[in-house]
Length: 178
Image 1 (cartoon, helix red, strand yellow):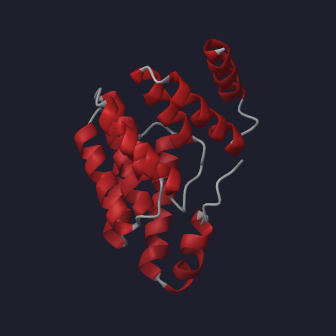
Image 2 (tube, rainbow, N blue to C red; image 1 turned 90 degrees about the horizontal axis):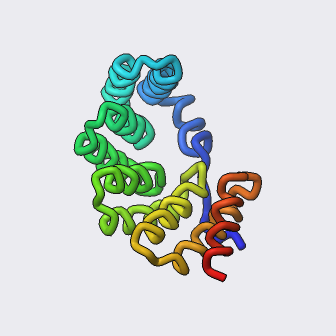
């Protein structure tokens, strides 16, 4: 059963304001260019575009994605800092909470990661919604709390029922617990 968390899309967040705010419109264009640079493997160019986007109009999205680029360069402390800035700009954006949790997992700070995935689950603006559930299940598995991991995978499946890997993980864990 899906939770009744009110949701807001990227378009809901920015579309109307971007029509009247030229700086936001330019920031969103630069963010799109950054995404293209990333897609083509040019992380340095993506970083520059995200920084320029933030200079025009700081958005939680650009801070979060800039952090993601830093993480690809193994600059995890800087990635976490960008996520904290994203949360300051828009506390309802779930990606930076989930990303902080992922970066903490990479740093073997499993217990600290748990709280960030829980916060991501409550965010009003987050796609793909199943990620924090999967990641929280991962935390519980690492901690040896397999029974706590199962409902997290179940909720992830509720959000993304067609995800075959997730279905397999759920079935494997269920089999292990029986």
